[in-house]
Length: 361
Image (cartoon, rainbow, N blue to C red; front, side, top):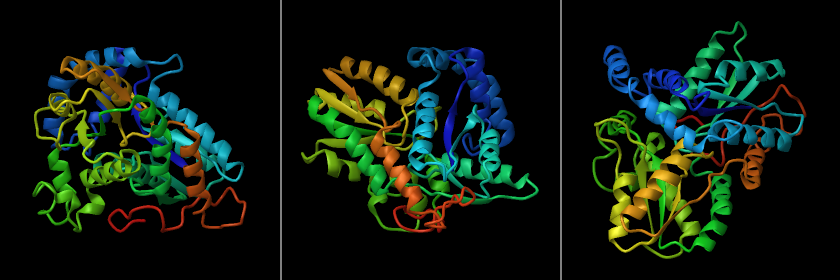
C-alpha cells in the first residue's frame, strides 16, 4: 500500500521552506496558470517573501522529531503496517519533499508487490491534490520496464470508517468543552479549479445550494464533498440544530476562493453571540501547519480579538486506533485474493464504501 501525503519542508528554516514551496507551487495542477506567468509569480512575488513567514509559522509548531505532518504520518504508516500484518507492505510518500514518492514506490516494489494500492490521504477529491498524486504515481510507474498494476483509491469523504473515526476522536473533546458552535474548516481551493472540474460547465458555484443539488458535477466537486462531510459529521456530533457551520481556510493570493472563508466566519460567529467555538478540520487526516498553527494559534488569537472566549481545535485523526482499524478493515475487506496470504496481491476490489470519482471506484 502506498500512502501519499502532501509534503513538508525538511526544516523550519527559510531555505528549506523555499525549496519545498518551489516544488509545491511549480506543480501546474496546484498553481494552474500558464508556465511563464507561474514562474514569474513564484520568483518575483511568492518565493522572495513567503518562505520567511512560513518558516516562522513552522517553528512555532515544529516537534523534536520533525514537522507535525511528518511525525503523525509516520506514526500512521507504522500503526497500519502493524495492524495489517506480514501479508501487506505499507510505505509513506510525500507528493512534495521527503520522503519522496519515488523512494516509497521503490520500497513497495522491493517488497514484492506487483499490484499496488495507491491511497492519497485526502478525504475529498481535488485535481490539485488527489489528481496530482495519481498523475505523479502513474508517471513514475510508467518509467519502469515492467509497469506495476496500480489500484487508485478514490475520495473517501463519505466512507463509514472515516466518519466513525472522526466521531470517535471528536466526541469526548466536544463533550468536555461544551461549545456554543462547531465549525468544520476545510482547506480552500480557487473557484476556477472547482469550475474546471465541473463536466457540465454550468453546475458548480452556479447558485447558493449547488452542492446539495443532484448532478454529474458532484463526484468531482471538492466543495460538494466537503459540504457532505460536514453534514455527515454534524449529524453525528452536533445535536442542536443551527449550532454548526462550515468554512474554507488557507487561501492564497487575490483570486476568488470557495466561500465562506474561515477567517471571515470567525468574527461573524462572535458577533452572533458564540463564545465557545470548537473547530474540526476534516479535510486533513493528520495534524499539520494548517491545523496546529493556522487554526490552533492564529484562529484562536483572532477569535479572542473578535470577542470570543475559547476556541478548541479538535485533534485530527492522526494514528488514532479507530482510524487505523478503519483503514485496516478497508484493506482486508477489499483485497482481490481474499483468503490468500500473498504479499504480491495488494488490491482494493471495486465497490462498497467509497463514493465513485468520475467513474473510477
